[in-house]
Image (cartoon, rainbow, N blue to C red; front, side, top):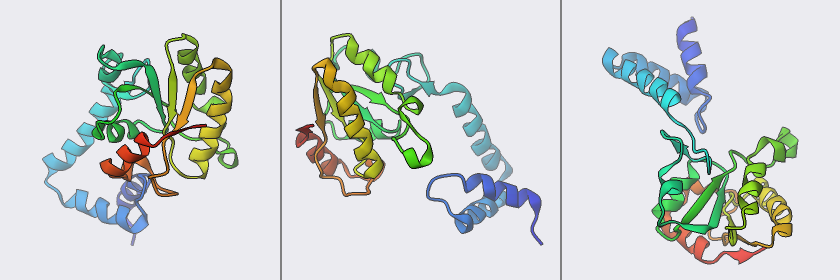
Length: 197
């Protein structure tokens, strides 16, 4: 007979990306079999992260301060903004060591079928940053899938009136692939081979 507490735990774990019902149930049983301190440590770490981590006031990247380390770093190129879909994409780009500018996190991609429009993303904030006149190039590093392509095309149209160079990272990333799972060499080549849109 199903135990409601285990079913609820598995359902919550199942909300994580890439975790199906069987895996979620396996994780639930594993957590229940852990030492109490270890299981409570996981719960405490989740609560602590939820309480202390927030989006950077400038770029949207996760930080535990008002402004993230990248935006606060005076050595970063202020005339380049690399636009990514999710906060997890920033550390992936940083590991390439091929980019020394700033970032802008959209928190998603356009998806009319899912009811996600420009107003649901941080598009207005990006345009406000470009309006300052400091930005010379906007690099669109959205995922190389249908949603990422639609988002990139939309942003290119929106940025056109501002007279900035709009580029898209090259297609070194497989179609349907996510930045988070792309190796550093492929990502560095894609960044180096970006083209104007």
